[in-house]
Length: 144
Image (cartoon, rainbow, N blue to C red; front, side, top):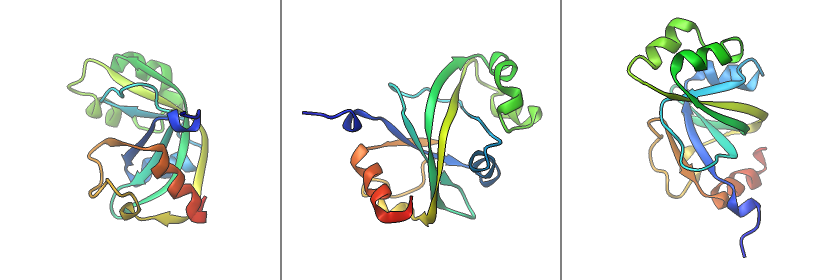
């Protein structure tokens, strides 16, 4: 029988260092994405792109909002942690986008190499899903 923790949906997101830093410092309260997630995401593992190239922590997802980019900007500009020009460039060819509202944030004491995940061999272009078991494996490494 599946437990509540087994039903969680976890995404591994590739995030640029400047945005990841803002998330872990509590300055960025929303992560924007062009691609729709299947189902509800409860947690996001933060894979920081080069030159870091490691998983530095995770955050809980409070809510996922889908809307057109102008509406997303209007709703989240003060907490989005991104300049308007960068936001507009990112969503330049999109009719809709996603905003993941960031809840509790946890950074790991030691960065986690991607190789710990059995089924993920290369960094995700944007994001990929991982199993609750893989998430627990990272948390058990005593890095949280």
